[in-house]
Image 1 (cartoon, rainbow, N blue to C red):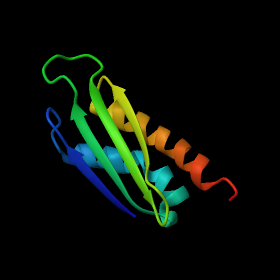
Image 2 (cartoon, rainbow, N blue to C red; image 1 turned 45 degrees about the vertical axis):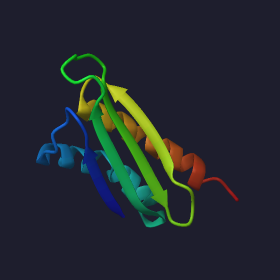
Image 3 (cartoon, rainbow, N blue to C red; image 1 turned 90 degrees about the horizontal axis):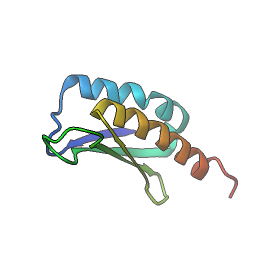
Image 4 (cartoon, rainbow, N blue to C red; image 1 turned 60 degrees about the horizontal axis):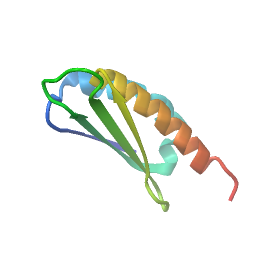
Length: 101
């Protein structure tokens, strides 16, 4: 499973950001990694320079042979947004991939 991080305005792509993202997606990777081809993460400051709860994290998981699954989180910091989105993604993947056909 490949993890791709894309940063937008107001978010710097750092080693700490990558490490935090990898750490928060460990459970998703352990549980669903063999069924996913890729997870794409889009990070952005919705209102650069304004402050507040405006850091967005969109995560899109690509299960093999199925439609993508996307979630979004909006938090005060980029790290909090990543954490919230990873939790949402795990729940969304469980609903979609763990149910019986």
